[in-house]
Image (cartoon, rainbow, N blue to C red; front, side, top):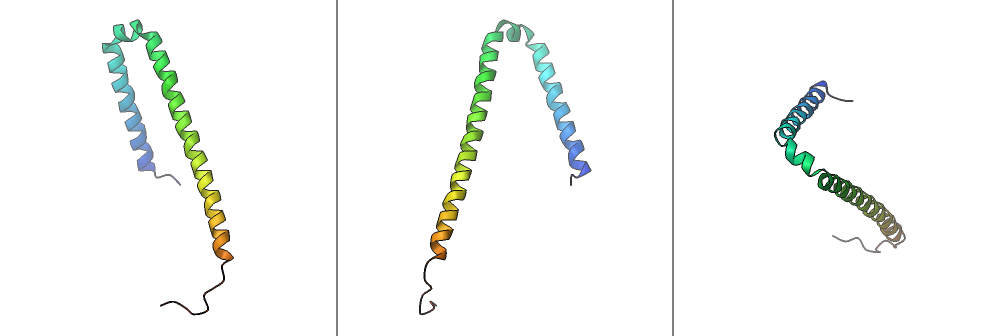
Length: 86
């Protein structure tokens, strides 16, 4: 369930970020247009880094889940101590 106040705040943040980026793009239009291929390569590399980081996170999370299951299984098979510890 979403809270209405948070949604409007997120929309306000997105609007502010869009206005800021629009202003910067207008001010530095010549630099953006003249270095278009460099910006394209940077965008592709940035997206690739995000995808690789996300896949690595998912892989580590699934490995951790399997490891926890193995440890839980091993601990469940242990015999209880004949004398309780204090």
